[in-house]
Image (tube, rainbow, N blue to C red):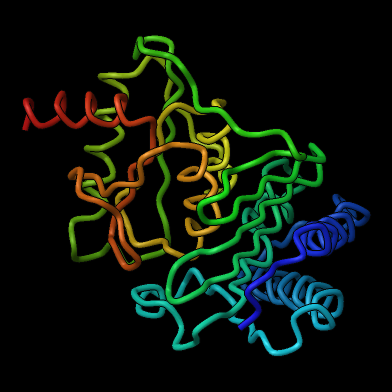
Amino acid sequence: MQHEINIPIVLEAVKKAGNLFLKDYKQNTIPQTMDELVAELENIDTLCLTCLKEDLSVEFPNTPWHIGDEFDTEAQRNPAPHAEYWLCDAMDGAIQYLQHMAGWTINLVLVRHGQPHFSVIFDPLANEIFWAKDGEGAFMNDAPLQLSRKTDFAVMLSVFEYGHQDKSHNGLSQKTGSTVTSLIQNFGIVRNYGPHGLQLAYIGAGRIDFFIQEDLDTYNWIAGILIAREAGAVILTTDGTPWKWGSESLLVAKKETAQQFIQLTSKKS
């Protein structure tokens, strides 16, 4: 296990990977079939992982790698069986990238003893890199992040997300619909921006006030969870209990905002 992290080297490696994709942005033919889509997604994973491993293998020669497959529900319930490993979401928002739209990032997390220890989210289009280290704060391009100071729900920006868990028999579609209804009833602004991790980083930056998701989506969340938490946000499930790896929902906001929303929605249920 490597106790000291050379943060500049990691940040530069993630930037290099992101800018590699930026160079080819909007150059692909938009996939028209499932086979084409899957092939493009696999190409993204391979290219990103190859680039990151090449740049980080010298500094972290003994740290294993784990690819976060967001379609694998069971694998997301527990951390990988390593004391320390890199968890790579090669491109969060790959669909947007392939559709020639904004909203895609390169996410990398160093997981230590089953918890996110260091995470990076790079948005090449905005040239913004968000990062956090456990217990040492969260930053964007070296500036400390600061949560929103809003108190009025009417001017707050709330976002919702959904993942790839099977929703055919567990009521998740209905729960998601009910959650969106609650947002519309309580917040002045409701949106969905696509890349999960970046939206959580935006919570830390004060750009988004409230994030909620009814689903199991650990790999999409984990990089942003550390950044939001280190910026001062609370990391909860949708029923208000502390989030832990494997939880099947996520609510992230400033503490007072989260508490008020939970109180408002519990009164109506």
